[in-house]
Every structure is written in C-alpha cells, then in structure tokens.
Length: 74
Length: 141
Image (cartoon, rainbow over all chains, first blue to last red; front, top):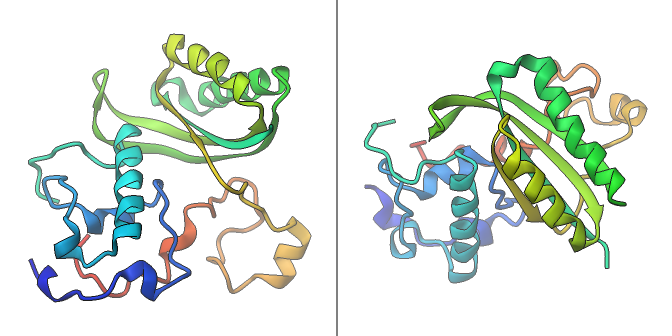
C-alpha cells in the first residue's frame, strides 16, 4: 500500500474528474483487492468526495461492476 | 415534477444481441407508454460480471436515460423484477441527461476528442468516458 503518501483529494485537485458509478476503472482505485472500500485516511479523499465515491461504489456493486467481496487477486 | 433517471438493465446474454435489444425495447416502450420521454439508450454489450448472478457469469449491459414523473418508477421496477431475462436492474436519479453532440457537428468539431474508430455515433460507446485522461497516476487497477 503506497497510499500513505497521497495528501490531497484527487477530485478537489482535478475538477473535471467526475464520480460515476459506471466508471469501473476509476472506482477500482478506491477499493482493495478484496473489494473493500479504502478509507479516507488512506486514499486522501476529502469528506465530501469520499461520500460520493462510497455511494458510487455501492451502486457499482449492485450492477456487478464491482464485487461485494472477492478473494480473486486482480 | 419531471426528473431525470437512468435505468440500468443486465440482460441475459444467452438471448443474443437481437433478444437483448427486444428486451430493452420493451422497457423503452413501457416508459414512453407511461408518459416518460426516453432520452437515449446506451449499451456496453456483454460484459463479465463481478460476481455470479443466478449462475450467470456475464450479462449484456444497457443504459436508458429518461425523463419522467417519479410515478413511473414502480411500474418499471415491477416489470424488471418479474422479467426472467433481466438478471439485475437499477434505477438512479441523475442530475443531467447526457448530451450527445449532434452527429454532423461531432464529425467536424470533435475528431480529436475520442478514439478515431468511434466511426459515426451509432452505438460506439462514449458515455463511459471521464476516465481516459485522468488516470496516469495511481499505478494499480
């Protein structure tokens, strides 16, 4: 986990970056290999954006874009 | 008040493309029959599922954006739930409908914006964009 270094929220940095539940590639970076949501303190995401990321991940799980849990190493 | 929604349908991919299209059409028809206006439909085609749903490993993903009264939602939900060819469905409220550039305009104005092989609109998928330019950084996926 090289997450400890990320200081600023990526979504505040880049205003054009939108959070979309269909965007698997983006959301993958906010879950662990097992599929758990990475906490704010590790991802550096601000409170506001973390809430949105979380909501998007949960939607993505409902439509099987992301796993609820997975032991497969991707 | 009319609101914007997006309906996601995971259709059994064993129906083949034609069957999938028919299934999606049933929902667009249902929506327009209920007084909602279908804005656009989009498809990812057959995609691997992140987990098994009713023993299926893959499904065909379709997205229907529409505008309508919240009252149409129970109808759609019910239809989708009873429909055996729909493995999973989801309706989300969205703030803005995705605006497609006009086909002719797009040809002139935005050739650099997307991949060249997105020949002429059609079903060439552009809605799942947003990522392409932004992810140089975080190494892992």
